[in-house]
Every structure is written in structure tokens, then in C-alpha cells.
Amino acid sequence: MRRTFLFALTLLVGATMGVYAKKQPAKVVEPKQPKYVFYFITDGTGVNTLQLAEYYMGQCKGIMGRVPLFMNANYPVVGVSATWCTSSDVTDSAASGTALASGTKTYSGAIGVATDSVTPIYSVAKRAHDIGYVVGIGTTASVNHATPGAQFAHNKSRQNYYDIGLQVPEAGFEFYAGSRFQLERAKNTPENRKALEDNCRKAGYVVTKGLAEYEAKGKNADKVVMLQDADINSDDMPYWLDRKPGQVTIVDQLRAEIDFLYRKSQEKGCKGFYLMNEIGGIVDHACHANDGAAAAHEVLAVDSCMHIAFEFYKEHPDETLIILTADHETGGLTLGRQSGGYKIQTDVLQYQKCSISEANAHMAALAKEKGGIEKLTWEEVKNQLKADFGYWDKVKLTEEEEKRLHDLFDKTVSGDAADVRTLYMSSRAFMSEALKIMQEKACIAWTTGGHTAGLVPVIVCGVGQEMFTAHNDNAQIARNIAKILNLEK
Image (tube, rainbow, N blue to C red):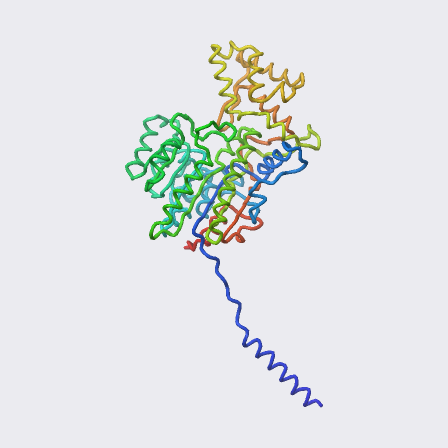
């Protein structure tokens, strides 16, 4: 009996071992290297910045709760990222732009250099270009601003705009786009701006200004620098809220980039294209100014771009990777404020018809027409505020709120109220107060006019998307892209 049991057990073990011996290890399937990469950055955009736009859309439709942005509703991976740099837990755009570009962290202010201020750090875009990808760099800010600059330049300070601008053609990327070349104050002359444009022309780039010129001269060029209309005297493209017919928008720019890069990527020897576009370059500027309406509309423009990229993905689902993230949060935005109770009323922002920057320009033009700010009457000021903010018409003001505005206007005229300065603009004190009242009406609040360490979104679709789930780090995002493209050193 015992011998029979042992014999049976031996047969069972042997049979089992035989099964295991025959079983082959699972084959590891390496993800396909994407042919088309969209790397989108929306500057200064935190998780709450996206939610502001979502609640705004919902409340304008009379819906309780958020109406998801296209990207949040359709992209399969939605995560978050931390943004610290080597010099602070609260980063600037240069350091974070460098981390996002290369996978290496550095100090605030640095563009593509290590913490020793000298050693160059090369971007994933440059490394992709070296192995045969066609590369495009775009932004709603200036071509040589911090975030785009980190993709192609190396400088110890982001403020050295002229030197950074000189490096545009050195990287050899096929497509650059932005408002124009920005210059530091000491070099801010039309001659120096033209010199940077001419430097690109000498390197074989076609430099175009405005959509018509791009279509006529740049669309079929070998290399191009696509700038904003020549008559727009600004380092940034107009806010989505301020755009006028005929002006280049971020949607126009993105469509041009996709058409151009796709055409170039079909040439013999090309592996595909790599596009980094700071599609939300001036979300940051709106948040520095604590302008909720401008920020919400700029996010909607970003969402339009994500929709366009997704349509491309649907045509090339096995060859495309789309990533959106932000370099940092700006403004410390909160949705709700103690004085407003447990509510938000973001739909009131629909009555603000322009950004605070544009509203200031309107008021300055009115003052110039009347012969100076001191020549304006309060009724004339009220009419302009009604046109730009909807006050006294769509948005009712209390007596106390009107008194706040009137008193600051009087103090502005008398010289007793200084202008209010934010990072990218200056406002008359009563105009700054008008914007502040709008935030109060919407029941949103801002804790700062600067950056914060708040979490930023990471929204992904396509080849390798699983590498970006959950909680990310800005430098790791770039390292993941490099790994997906087989660019690891």
C-alpha cells in the first residue's frame, strides 16, 4: 500500500515538473516606438486651473458641477506631477522647463545648463532630432522665452534673451513658432529683434509674420520661424479672450505645425516628428494677474489644441504619443472663498469681455482721447468698465463696491494711488480693484501673484501612456519620453 502511494506520488510530481518544464516564459512585448510625439506644456496651470474652466462651462450652462474638458473626458491617462527644482520647492519656468525638456533638474533661472551654470543639458527634442526626428518648438509666448528656450538653448540665466535667441538656429530644428523674439531691457530695440530674425534667415530659415505670409512663404519651406502678425507689438500672442479676426491663434499655429512636420516626416530617412508646444504659455500670465476669466478662456484654448491632437491620434493610433503637463502652478487659485459661503459663481466671468491687460489698454486709449486720465469723468470710466466687465448692467455692484472703485479712481487722478504691478503688466489702481471685485463675485480667490508648489496635471494618450499614470515628477516625464523613444544614454 505504502509502495503504491509513493509510486503514484512520484508519477504526479514527475508529470507536474514536466508541465513546468514545457511551459515557456511569457514573452515580453516591448511597446512600439511612437512615430509622432506631441509634448504640450501649459504654463502656470495647476489642477484647480483646469477645474476653473470646467466649472465655468458647467455654470454657464446652468449645470451643477463640472463639465469635463475634452482632454479630461477623452484621454485615458489623467494624473498629476510635482514641479520642484534644485534651488527651491517652488520652481520658475526655466528650471522646470529644463527638467521637462531633458529629464535633469537644475536651479531657478537656468536654461539647459546644470547646477554649475556651465555644463550643457541636452533636451529630448535635441536627442530625437539627432536620430532622425523632425522637430518643432512652439509657444503662445516669445520664441526665446523660458519654456521653449529650454528645448534648444543653454544659458545660466533665462533673462539673457538675446543670447538665447541667437541659439535658435544652432539646434537645427525645422519649425519654431511664437509671438516674436523677446529682448532684455538693455537690448530691447527693433534693430536687435531684426538681428535675431536675420540670424535665422542666414541659417536657412524662412521667417514669416502672420498667417497670410506663412501660407505664402513658410508652409512649404525647408525650415521656418512662424511669428505673430508684424503689427502686434507684444512679446505674447493675444489672449484667447482678446483675439481678433485675422490674428494668429494657438489653434492656427498648432495646425500649421502638424501639417508642416507631418509633411517633413514623410521624407526619406525621417523617423517621424517631435513637437513641443507651450500651448498654454500665457495661462501663466493670466494667473500672475489673478485674472480668472482670462485664465479660464486660455484653458479652453488649450483644450481645443488637445482635441486637434486627439484627432491626429485617431488617424495614427499605434504611432502617436500625446502628453500634456505644466511647468508649475501660478496664483494659488482656490475655488471658493470664505466671504462667498460654500459656493462658487464662475458663470459671472462670462460678462468679462477681455483680459485685464486689454481692459487697461482700453482705459488708456480713452484717457488719451480725452487728453489724460485727469480729464476723464467718473461716468466715462463707468461706461468703459460696463463694456469690459459688465458692471452695472450684467453684474450688479453694491454701493460699497462702487465706492471702492470711485475712491481709487479719484486717488489715481490726484496721484495718491500708485499703479499696481504684477509680473507681466501694470494696472491703474482702480482697474486692479475692478478685477479683484470680479474674482469676489465669482467666489474664487488667489493666494499669490507668483508661483506655488501646487500639483499640475499630466494628461496622456497613445504609445507608452501607462508610464505616466498616478503621481509623476517633471524630470521623470522627460526621462519616460526618452525611454519610449529609445534615447536612454
